[in-house]
Amino acid sequence: MSLAPVVRLQNVTKVIGKRTIIDRVSFEVQPGEVFGFLGPNGSGKTTTIRMIVGLMGMTAGDIHIGEHSVRTDFSNAIVQVGAIVENPEMYKFLTGYQNLLHYARMNPSITKERIQEAIELVGLQGRIHDKVKKYSLGMRQRLGVAQAIMHRPKLLVLDEPTNGLDPAGIRELRDYLRRLAQDEGTAVLVSSHLLSEMELMCDRVAILQKGQIIDVRSIRGQDENGKALLEEVLFDVDHPDAALGILEGQGAARIADGLLLLTSDRAGIAAINRRLVEAGINIYGIRVKTKSLEDQFLEMTGSETIG
Ligand SMILES: Nc1ncnc2c1ncn2[C@@H]1O[C@H](COP(=O)(O)OP(=O)(O)OP(=O)(O)O)[C@@H](O)[C@H]1O
Image 1 (cartoon, rainbow, N blue to C red):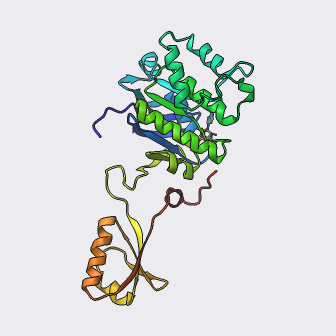
Image 2: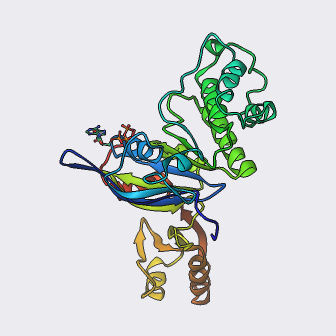
Image 3: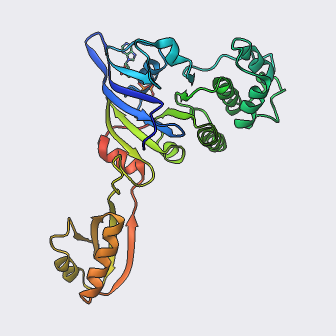
C-alpha cells in the first residue's frame, strides 16, 4: 500500500516505576482501514491508546498522526483525531441534537450540514431529537461517535467500543464504522479483547500481549507481507499411507483418524490434489480447517485467558 499512514507508532515504550508496561510497540493504520488492537485484559491496550491521544506521555519512541509528532507537535497532531477513550460525557436532559450543537459551538468549522452528515453516518437520524436519557447504550455510543467525527478527523480511536453492546448493537457499530472508513477515508482504531468481534469488524489486527505486539495480521487470509496464510487441510483418500509416501518431502503431512492431514496455502492444495490424482490415489473429499483468529490467538498466547 503506497498511501501515507494516518497514524504511525514507532517503538512506543511506557515505563511506570520499574515496570515496562508498553514495550517497543510499532504499527501503522492506513486511511480507510479499520484496525483492531486486540489483547487480553491488562495487556496494555488502554495505555497505548492514551498515549496516542495524548492523555499520557510516552517514555520512548514516537507517534505520528499524519506528519505531526504527538511528542513535539501535539496540537497539530491532535486536531486530526476523534476519540472515545473514557465514556463520552453527554447531557442526558438534552436531546442528542442539542448535545451535538453544544460541542459544535466549540469548533467554528463544523457546519449544520456536517452535523447532519455525522448523524446520518451513525444512523441516528430517527432518534436524534429524543432526550439522551431515553437512549440505549448503543445509541449513546453512536452519539459519541457522531460527536467525535464532526470535525472530520483523519483518525477515529475507540477504546473497547463493543463493551456492553448486544449482538445487534455490535453489528450496527461494525456497519457504521465500515461506512465511515469507506465514505470518509477515516482510519479507525478500535481496541477489544473480543476476538470474534474483531474478526467481523476489522481489516487488520495487531495482537498485544504483556505490552508487546506479538503479531499484526490481515483478517482476509494474508499476513503483513501479503503472503498467503497456511491452512490445515484434510484429504479423505483411499490409501492414506501411500498418499503420505507420495507427498514425502512436501511439508508436514501426517495421518490423523484415517485422513491425510497437512498444512498448505491455497495454491498448494490444488498442487497436492493434482499430484495425488496423477499417482492413482482416489480422493473422496478435501476439507480446509480454516483457523479462526481465536484459534490463532490462543496458539500464540498459549494459556492466556481472554475476556
Ligand atoms: N498508572 C499506572 N500505574 C501502574 N501500572 C499501570 C498504570 N496504568 C496501567 N498500568 C498497568 O499496565 C498494564 C496495562 O494496562 P491497560 O489498562 O493498558 O491494559 P488493557 O489492555 O487496556 O486492559 P483492560 O482491557 O483491562 O483495560 C496493566 O498491568 C496495568 O495494571
